[in-house]
Length: 491
Image 1: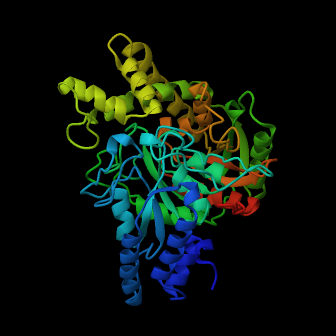
Image 2: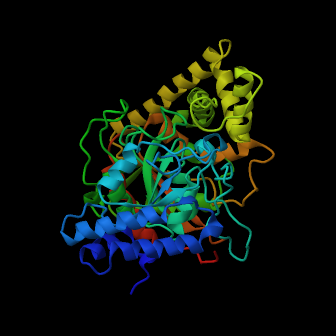
Image 3: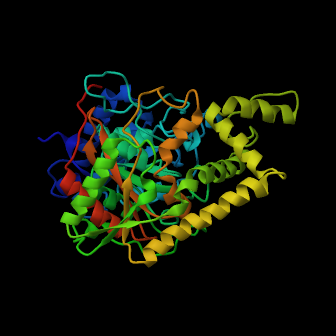
C-alpha cells in the first residue's frame, strides 16, 4: 500500500470514496507520523482518541455513501481556534488549561464536512510573531534544513506549527490564521501552499483575537487544489460574526486548472525593496515568465503607499491587540496569580501570563491609543491604511486581475538568528504580506523554487476582494511550472 501520509487531500479523498483504505487507517498513519515527528514540536496537543472516534464515524458514513466533502481527512488545527472540550491556549501561559465549551465556526464547518481532528498545532503566543519562537510551548521547527547544515530553522509564524506539520506529512492539511502574513510566510518557508482569503470570507467567531480588523482564517496544504478544497469548507456566512460576508461560497476547486489566458498581472515596482536577495528577484521574474507562458499578460504597476504599510501595520495591529488582550485579567478564565488586592492581582497575572513579545505589543498599542498620541499615531495609521487600500482599488479598476510579488524577502532563517537584538528585524519579514491584510484582500503563497542553500521560496498572488477563484487558477499555473518540493527527512 502507498504510504498514506504521502497522499494529497484530493488523492486521499478519492481513495477513501473508492474504499481503497479506511478513514481509520488514514488517521492511524498520521497519528504514527505525529508520534515520530515530535522533535518538530509542531503539535502542542495531540488528540488521538478523538481522531479515532471521528474516523470510525466517517467510515460509517462513507459505507452508506453519505460522506461529506472532507470525509475522513485528518487535519491539524492552529491552537487559536476554540475546539469544544479540547484545550485551547493560543500557545500562551495566560490561557493555561483553558478548555472551551464551544466550537469556532471555522472548525465546526470542517467537522460538518467530515474532517478529523488530529490535534492542535503550535503558533506564536497569541499569534504575535513571524517565527513561532514566542510560543509558551517552545519553538516549532521546520522540517527543512540548509544543505550540509544541521542547525534548526524556523517554520515561520505565527502559523508555524500548521505549516511544519503539513510539510513534514504529519497531517494532510491544516487550518491557520493570518493577521499580517501568518499563513503565507510559513507556507513559503516550509514549501507548501497557504491562502489568506478576503477579510470576511471566513468567520472569526470562536477564534482567539489578535487584531480584529486584520485577522482572517485560512488553510495550509501541500497543493493549490487541497487549499481550494479546505477553503470551500472553512468559508461561509455566520450570523455570530457581523464582519463575516453574507455571500455564497464558490466551488473553488473548479477554478484549479482553469485557463489564465488574457489575465492581466500587475508587477508592483515598490516591492523591489533595498537589500532584497538576488535569488528573490530572479524567482519573481521567473514567476512572471511562467504566467506569460500560460497566456497571462504582465504589467508594471505602482502601489506608492506600500512603503508606509509596515509602520502603519505595527501601529494598527498592536493597538487592536492592546484592546483585545485587556480581557485576560485573571478573573474569568485562564491564569490567575494571587495579589495583595484586585489591582495587584491584575498586574501579577498579566506580568506572568504574557510573554515578552506580547507585552511589547500591548505597551506599544496602549501608547498609540493614549489621549496624547491617538491623533499622531493611530489616527494617522488608519488614514495610511485607507490610502493603501485605494492604491489596490485603482490598479484593479485599471483592469489588473491579480498582483504578483515575492512572499518573503528571504528563505527561512535559523532558530535564534533574528530579532534578539532588535525586534524590528523580525518585523521586516512581513514587508510583502502586511499590505494584503491592511487592504482586506485575498493573498496566496505558492512554493516556486529553492534557494542556493536548498530552502524553499514562495511567490505571492494578491487578488480582488472575494476573487479567490482567480488566485487558485493562477496559483495552479505557477505550481505546474515550478513543481513540488519536499524536505529530506531527519526528524
